[in-house]
Image (cartoon, rainbow, N blue to C red):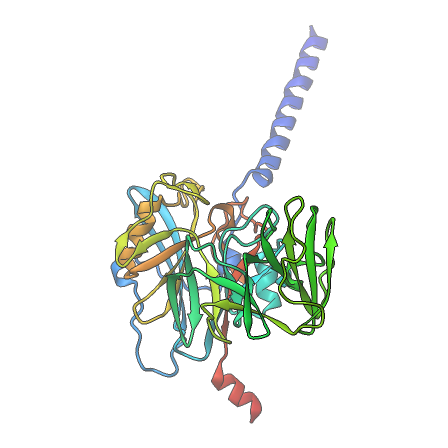
Length: 400
């Protein structure tokens, strides 16, 4: 009997010990992460009045042209954490430009890496991309075209100290001997019958695995024209023009010859300093909500999900909006029409979708100010908007 009591006592003590160990481990394994340290130096605007949140621009030359706001609110009974970044592009101390991961058409990188590489004051994830990171539409950096437009979605255009959202349909051609040879696209996989230009930003080769006719162009002149059965290397100081020919296709498709001087052109030309990035669907256009219940890139718009959007104010200022989501009790995320209502209430009449979900992210002063839904961590993305700020007063003080 005593042996049985002793054995039961040992079992009882063992159960208590194991329970305490599991409880102790659970505190560390399952507790919610503390994000307060990530945003400790950020001042939040906790106002729930969206209508009063729009920026009141003035002529104070010392005013920071970049303004960040954090709005904690409830929309239709759901908690929302909304992060807003406004950039007054009329102030030459501030600039916004799109960038691609590793400055290439293909590939992925973390937003924090892109921000650090470009010495950004702030950064926001950009738009949609294909399987291997190719942008979904137009990308122009400093007047140089990386990828062409689809003509189906609005383009964020930044030029001459202001931003625009407009639909742009581009045409492309090779200029030679005072003539034009029109082509189908730039830095996109060529389909049968298409003529596509490839620049070093596309990668080391044109990645073709089918019969094609390729002109190698270096330093503005045609170096060679060859029939290929696969890929061809892109020269660092030039480009390729590849025509995917159907069986028995005419090899004289190119009107120029080896030695001719050629140049790539696109229309409408945006200017030598312009930046452009094709977004997703319109959310609001000319003051009306136009987003539908489904979207080619986003999918179903009636779910509450993390969202990233870009809008343009009447004065040309650009506004980036990141809404946290998929985190019950913290931030649910918004439906498409809810996002449109918020944007209109903020005073923005034109806005478009950017990539959302786990890609939604905003960085300010080197810190992630929102809470990404990708387990609270950054997700590799294909592109970003980089916001730079030049403090003239600090620069002048450093020169003295």
